[in-house]
Image (tube, rainbow, N blue to C red; front, side):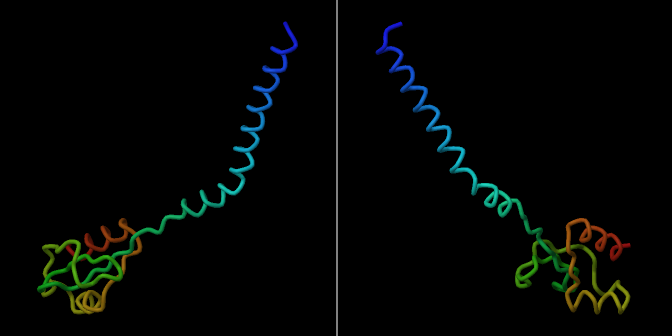
Length: 105
């Protein structure tokens, strides 16, 4: 193999090595970004009153319900009505479903 071919091959290999090194060092700060983007805040819900029925609102937006249930407030115990009128917070969707099941039975 001639010297010029060896030089070309070495140059190509060196360029590849430098490119790979650059990508490796550039990605060192990526884990911090990945961790930050992996932190997902779960939506919290609020059970409130809407036209005499229990409605589901997104926390922070009690002006427009996500859903209006068929559960009428006047069918609840007074203590439950007070909780709903004050805004009953469900931290997770599972908790929301459990509260609706309890209130609807």
